[in-house]
Image (cartoon, rainbow, N blue to C red; front, side, top):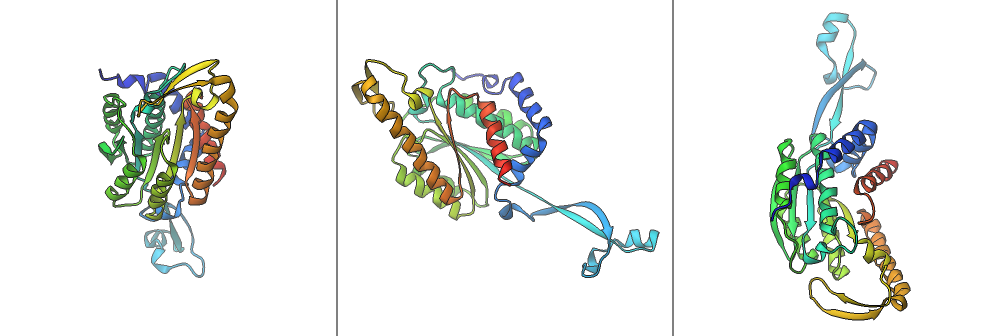
Length: 299
């Protein structure tokens, strides 16, 4: 049964995002316009203001209408607009359906984040599209900047049933092959697969000039391992089962997850990719705000 669009972008969440935008517009603008800005600058310009002509200025920029009225030379100043085309790239494999005790599954959490980012981009009049994958891409929407795009994106996602295995690397290679222009790719996944080919695929995207933000979403239990005693764990995609002593395994497990995240953080840093580790116990709107602030502080 399709989940209601309102489940992911409830009116109170829209109001919360709107307050974020009104309260900290410079953060949102910095997020969207500061994304490795140079590749996206100069597509178009808009008039900003006049200033007096100075030696060295291009005479072609003189506003002769102003000269006719004032008998003084003024230069038209133009401001480059930033045209960013964004794509939400969302993992919908079976492992994304997991939740231990949180309200949201990993997929629900990803969709909520994606909805907020889609809303922000379109609010800034930047086109936003969608790509959904498990073992391969299986749904997509072209990037558009009209307001109805938010509802279309959420309509597609509300019908998604997480299932099957994942092939993140193959899917990212497909994404790279589909894009003809430099884009902003916001990838949402638990990354529960062999890291090496995934990191290679991410590098391929960067080498093609795309900006990438990797939202690494794990369930709270996958990060903190709150289990006690003897527990049976089931691998969500392969369905393999393992019985372990949770108390004895906890420290080693938590250390391994920390190392897993740190490996991605270091690899992404070297590649110029934003790596955002999240878990489902974090309020997604607060997590987004913290990310926007940290992003803004770097520019």
